Image 1 (cartoon, rainbow, N blue to C red):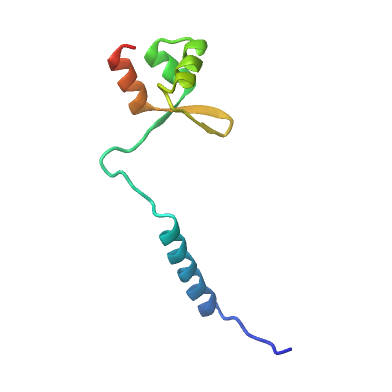
Image 2 (spheres, rainbow, N blue to C red):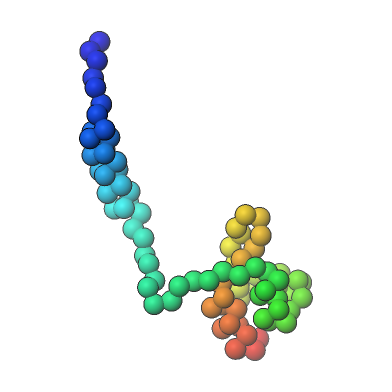
Length: 88
């Protein structure tokens, strides 16, 4: 069994190739015009003047599409504002 030496340069080349492969496999779509801001449930409730039950109903009906981050629901501020403006 022969011994092969891996240099820092070899690892750097491997890293760059791996990153290039991942970028091709998972293209990132960046929205430059409108950055998304996510707010907590209590902030969303204040904007909409809604109870926790109403927020749950909005989530179930698909009118709001929150994401769960570190155990708490976050709502897209643009979605909240659009819902508020529509008055529904």
